[in-house]
Image 1 (cartoon, rainbow, N blue to C red):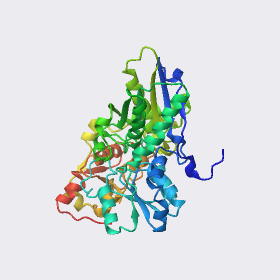
Image 2 (image 1 turned 90 degrees about the horizontal axis):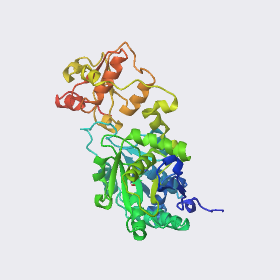
Image 3 (image 1 turned 30 degrees about the horizontal axis):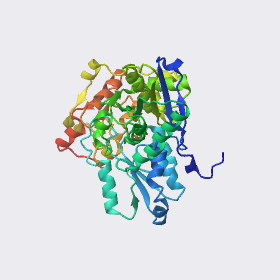
Image 4 (image 1 turned 120 degrees about the horizontal axis):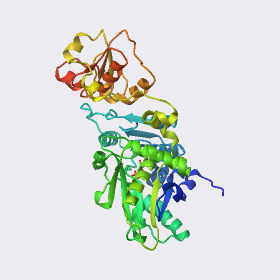
Length: 435
Ligand SMILES: Cc1ncc(COP(=O)(O)O)c(C=O)c1O
């Protein structure tokens, strides 16, 4: 089959029957909807195209750029589709935390605006949020921007209703499967699960829809955590029959089962979906006269997540990593008060572990900025600091910094955590450096 434009390859993704010998569930037919087969590699290719398709020529003619809140897959698809029409993309995000994803976006020429919130502990400096920054940009330069708005755009849902969901129903019918009991998928904007389930519920009246989120304080790139779902405009909790929480460790193990057991090179959100599917299926009574039928949405591919996997599971790559600090090490991690630090500024190396934006807004004078996730990577390969000077770690409130202080103290370096973090420094009225 010959295609004449890359957009013709969006959608019509395969439905793969997962080998029962691997999942081992008797009386269950489990299928994977391989959205990873879309041309730019993810479930978002359909959505990006659906949101801009009708307007793309007009956007190009007006010389506008796209502006969008995206942590990766939507930005990737929008950027590539835009490039084909000479349209740029500004991706506003506080969630790009996977190196390959941000590198790929940069390689494609995306203008990435990173906001605070990258740090894993709460950031008191984070005055800006993504939607406010986008709204201000549009208000300031209305002619410059076109905002597809995946978190509020109904086309995010209809693209999956008319595409993903309808395709699943057609493929099941072709295979002679007349029932569908469960649809399982990760929740980001919620477009894929809501859209697909909307189409499928018309045909399979008893379908149960299962949404998958990450643990409260955990991170699985591409889906949200329980506490973040309230930020999603399209999210309707009542739409789901069940919302399952999966931690990143379980997601990674399940991702490896998808890879090794079925040859499905899927990203960690698909692993989370697979783990959730097995959990829900195990608790679901089997129909008496037919198999239980379930479909899992496989959202994207494995390759962009190698650093994410390596950081959390170095053993999968044949590497070892020092164990995390014990509660006792954390409790005894040395601290330094803001006033004491102010007197020793020139004797110590200060490392601010917050995100770039928070650092730019204000930091302890002379502090370096090494974001917490990057610092974790550096420490995994050795001590990146000279032993001749004590190191002081700074974070928003003194929690993340205590973790780094404990780890570095264990390695024999004199180090301190700034007690109370940058918030305490500011509250003491001590000078802040900007930029
Ligand atoms: C890798 C990955 N998995 C799952 C999802 C969830 O998709 P949705 O936004 O349709 O809820 C996304 C969306 O960003 C994603 O990028």
